[in-house]
Image (cartoon, rainbow, N blue to C red; front, top):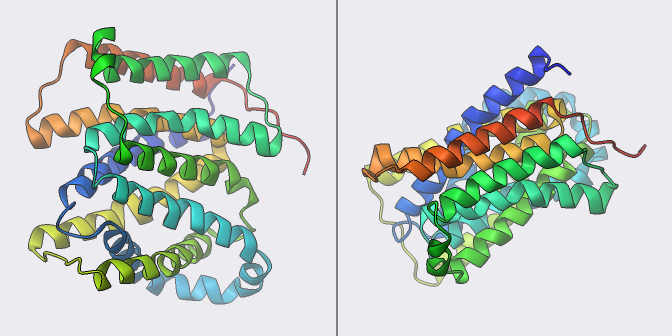
Amino acid sequence: MQLDRQSLRAFLLLGLVMLFWGGNFIVGRAVAGQVPPMTFALLRWLGALAFLLPFAIGPMQREAAEIRKGWKPILLLGLLGVAGFHGLLYTGLQYTTASNALLLSAVTPVLVVLSGLIIFGDRIGGLQAIAMAASVLGVVVIVFEGSLAAASRLHVGRGELIVLAAALAWALYTALLRLRPALGATAFLTSTFIVGAVVIAPFSAWELMSGANIAWSWQVLAAIAYVAILPSIVSYYIYNAASVSVGPAKAGQAITLLPLFGALLSSLLLGERLYAYHGVGMVLILAGIVLGAFAGRAAKPKA
């Protein structure tokens, strides 16, 4: 059983994506109270489109027929992976910490597998199941701080439930990426970003008309620029391609890296301490991802 060069590159790039997305959680929490959540999500996608559209106009004109033909999956994927996930995530971050949100996101790989099983009849092999269990166990070690006594301190409130809903939206997006029309990456990405911005816009308008304000500052502008470019344009290009290259279950499993990167970023940016249980969790998460990389692809039924 060998890991080909293309798959190895996909997994390494997925690690970079998780680093960018870990930063997205922290930035989303940092601007909570300064920018309303739906408005922050809208500014993110408008910023991403501002960077992307100059390069996307040509491809979208050439592939207009395919866009019209595939409008249903484009609409569905834009609703789930662009509008739904980020609208829910930024809303949840108003009520819970970035650390909690990162830890809760680790349930996503399991939801990806369940979504594939229920919707497409996917099967998961024994090695892939072991790999996923190892990664999830690593997350559990970090969540419980290496002690079951820490479980009594866990709190699941409104923010945590909203973040879990966001995780479900992303899991469905990952599982349903196989339905994407035969579009180039730029045309597909731009189309889903437009859907997301259009869907989020009324919610943002409602926030602002209800009296919410944006506390503009250089930090807020920098936060918008960051989430518009690295966690959006760069990360979506990579994640969508990796989901095709290695399969949705394996791409989804990479999300177990988020709590690990979140802890590292919190240590570097916020001065939080790292403990031995972080190391144990890291070893288990990475072991699971390595095993998953070598596991066979889940069998899929014929279309």
